[in-house]
Length: 320
Ligand SMILES: C[S@@+](CC[C@H](N)C(=O)[O-])C[C@H]1O[C@@H](n2cnc3c(N)ncnc32)[C@H](O)[C@@H]1O
Image (tube, rainbow, N blue to C red; front, top):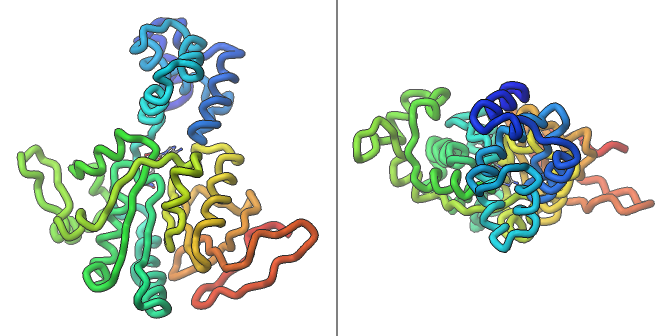
């Protein structure tokens, strides 16, 4: 929804006083929200923020955004309010087989290379803002199609900052919109109609039982550090909502925790090159992704050792 559309909607439903967030409350809320969620509302999105928050303001018996700011900051129950806000900020736009070249690269290049190099070591995959689960389910299907899921130790974790999205992912009931890009033969092979016949579909057991879901806020290091040691991280279509500082902070944790030759996939509109990160951009099996090559972050005054990335073509992302 556009910023203007959001403002008009909020004013129609909640009254003109909640149509926009006045200054300086807007700055207070914007800064607090980006600090706790990574999500950044710039000035053009001021009315969109009003639209997102208006329902929470009135649901708490409040009449102004400033009161809601105080609630988030000082209320004894602030953690619960943050959880509800995270649910409200989630943009639940996802579908199976999204950017399928990434799935193909994992199933046909990265996973086979991993097992060739480390036959006994499980392959750990983390879908870091998985929303309602379509992304980790797609990964499991791609690996099953490649004949790897049932024969090799593969762990798949899906996480999201929104507890409501993770509850829906665990429920695993998908309507037609989720299938808009999945080839029909894969839908027929890997999904069955939900038991109560409401028109939704659920993944077959050999897929769903392979995915473990948890709630984890990307901007809280303590929540993502245990997950970030995965060999493959999908963090797609969430950085588009984040401030540059928030993205850098998440990337720092990933770079510190991921193993050498860890592979990071971001969304098509989320190039990290302008942020001068330590990962290297590479083209692998037709996908552009980021590789941790094994060298340490650059220390002031010292050049990093150069490292080559076997099996992939890598070009340094970090600005010189
Ligand atoms: C558009 S969906 C992306 C889903 C999937 N990765 C894809 O590409 O289809 C964005 C998700 O990011 C989640 N998100 C936003 N801020 C987050 C944060 N700080 N920590 C974890 N997840 C967050 C939202 O709850 C939402 O489910």
